Length: 207
Image (cartoon, rainbow, N blue to C red; front, side):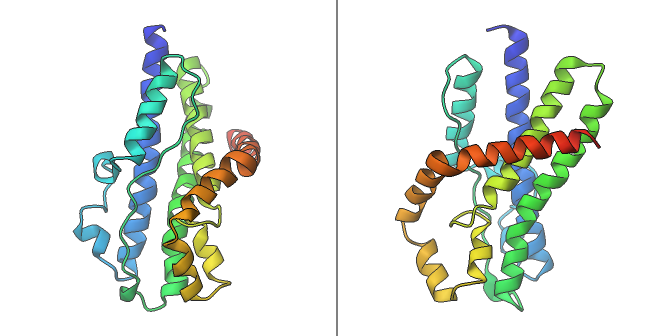
């Protein structure tokens, strides 16, 4: 591997960690607006990646990305540390809980727009432009992926609008749901998410 390629891979890792951190910060910030200081009190209302580093999920993500940087064709999977939210502090837990959840994917969309604008400015710098284009795709992908309506993803809060709170909480604490999510993603959903992400990435780059 060339040092230049390794540098690009490391820069992409930084972008991914930053994107995850902004995503989690958005959850904490909106929860705080609605009266829940839990995440803020635990030091999670920050974009510092270390504050959102999950010992398993983020370590796995970075490890797989590094292995891919050295030429191993491995699937990439991982997650950030979930932001704690106490919905007892909300006036309307169902609606405000949904808004807190949607703050994460929305933040990724705005990051994608920002990176797209920067990519259009950096057209004369090939490597930088390609990194920024990748950053657009990464954030669009994170947005769509987190909108899958299966716990523990943010999109599950949409599902909560159509079922009882009791049914939702039973679903969210079921340990089998995580494996169902993995099965759905790698068997059926991933190709659709990638296709949608590529299409929206191209649209944003055309701004």
